[in-house]
Length: 151
Length: 90
Image (cartoon, one colour):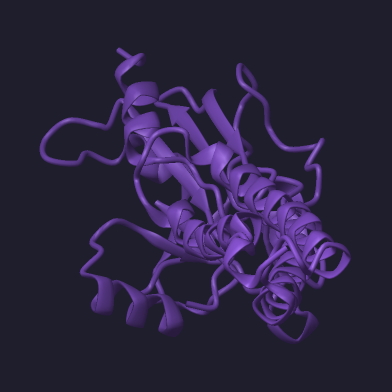
């Protein structure tokens, strides 16, 4: 077959685009978009599919060099995609290492009262927050947000 | 209101920087985190204990009306979810 007939190895380019999409999709957790819960999975799926496509693309570039291009671009892209996949999987496992918190108060149960210091060094209790008037009337409810800190 | 292991000084800085005016409470000894079973052992920088992310909506009688425990620390309760839960309380 003449060199003119060598086809462009599309799988390599699609794989590379998916790898880039996997990296970019990391930022989506921090948006306010609904469906935010699926983004960690989408991110992982993109990285896996990218590696699969690139591997197939790379294999055919090496096995059928007279048919497909992409030995060099395929090797570089696949290496990059594998690094991104390892990073994505590591992060995916890491951010899900949260305790089960089986003993935490459940819906319908009483929230245990407590007292802690606020930013002015004043002791504030939950019962105080639930009863102290805010803008004239006591609040209907209080939202307790526990966060990781170290901001 | 928000709770973390950060000291009042650290929380004060965060409130100033981010312009937050609601109550920030400090639990550096993890007393409340243990009480609520939310301690994430060695989850913080340098192997320190921190709080796992969690949100509770507590009504005026002290009863929990809504909770959210994320399985992925990148995914948190969104403002619209919390507001929807708050609207259920009358």
